[in-house]
Image (cartoon, rainbow, N blue to C red):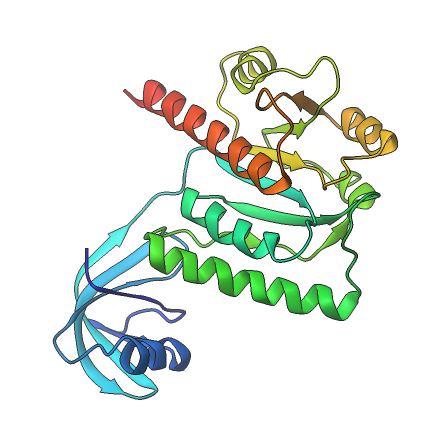
Length: 255
């Protein structure tokens, strides 16, 4: 794997690819890339280019393309709807989930959330989380930049239309919750969903009303570990379990 990886928003012109000012500054000034160094560029939407650095400046850089790659999206896209946790937990979650390959993250303001953001802070936090996701893509080699959506209140969000061919799952401590494989087998009848949306609550759990409304709009109750998990552990656990399960099932379908 090349030593340098950059995000680009422009398309190649011929065999040349221009790196944006911010990324060029980081590549050249911070990472100390030099002419002829091998660089891998990606657009966050499945396109990657590998080539040599040919134009270098403190805020400008160009790559002469040698190879072009197109990486298809996952056949089943894992999305997380996450109640806002305390402190910097969400920052860390965005990074770790991007490494795993999360497709979309919807931060939620819930009844028992200990964090409630005003409009300005919601916007600044969303910008920060998008930066975190981009950095995690560069570090991990993930070619698909996840969508970090603006913070929404949970009940209005639940009233929105579901995605096409979507399995909806809510992590729950309530009786009747089932394991991931059981939910997938029973609810889908062996069909692969296009999306799986996982709903994870805050430190104080969801309210009874939130559980009831979620059930009415099709969320299946998910049992996670044998013990009560912290917010960040529950999110990473759930995404990892479903991502691994769907990778395996996709491989079986395609083999």
